[in-house]
Amino acid sequence: MNVLTNIKDLSGDIDPVWAGDGSHLPKWFVTALNVPCEEGYVEINGARAHYFRWGDRRKPKLLMTHGFLAHARCFAFIAPFLAEDYDVVAFDLAGMGDSEMRGEGDPTARGCEFAEIAEALDMFADGHKPTLIAHSFGSGAALAAVTQLPDAFSGTVICDLMIMRPRLMEQYWNSRRSSPGSGNPDKPNQRYPSYEAARKRYILSPPQPVSEPFLADYMAYHSLRREGANWTWKFSPEVFRQSNKPDEWRKMGERLVKAPGRKAIVYGGKSQLFTRDSGEYIRELGGGDIPMIAVPEARHHLMLDQPLAFVTALRSILSVWGSNTQRV
Image 1 (cartoon, rainbow, N blue to C red):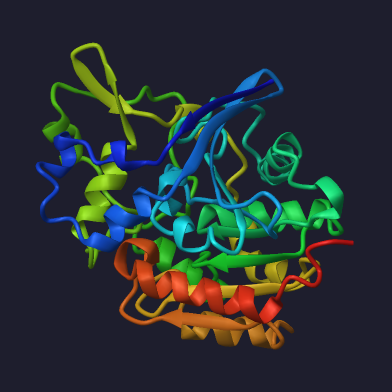
Image 2 (image 1 turned 60 degrees about the horizontal axis):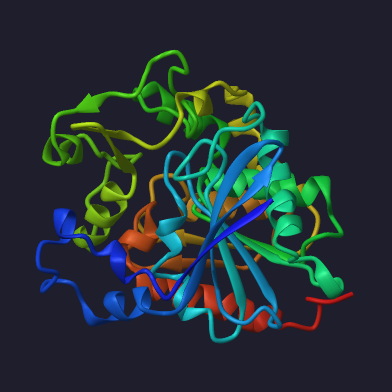
């Protein structure tokens, strides 16, 4: 089942609850949300999966997803800048954003989500091979997707995935930090008496300031839903019921290098999770042919720090790759 809600644009996302009168919002952001798009749900294994779609369906395909506990709106102000040249889909991973939980949420199941969404939205039609663009935790799922179906996708852009040398990762964990995907599946989501109370509890992981605070406000508001008189998080606690073994993260660099197909890395120049040393580590593992672009002044959540520079980095990679392998 494919349930569509055809909407003119996402200008309605600028709600006074988080944006006030909106006078402080930059023109580029407002313009991006006014680009025509489609919002809808597809039913996969009995659960609804939520997505947005921009651009011309005859163009080369881009399939995008987000990091852990985030949602597809992290690309709502990025994808419109790509829509002139591409058919762009951004989707919520199962149990996050507005997608219902399905499956176990293990790495294999997460990898399957890309093909499931692409198939449901006819992105493989006429021999098209979508390019995957994923952030953080979503990048690990993208690597699983191309490993499972190496001939289905035309390339993978990995955006600030946590990759460190094993000894540095141990140091990171020993400083009481956790890997993406950590949490208690049996703990119900907290409920808050007001939006303001909930907003105070919205914390990026890893914690960081953002160069564009209004984007953090936007992401926070759309991470929440009303439940009667209260507010609570959209994500399902079941997303924590997954394999999240330390060894899986220690080997992430090897997984990236061994994953089939074209790959590129975009990372924040000030990121804690992917650093210049991470790049050197990738090269030592045999990934010397993988292009890497550091976005200056950006941290892990690079689309919240330097969104337009992030767009430029994506455009550069896609331009170099071209569209000659989008069809078979």
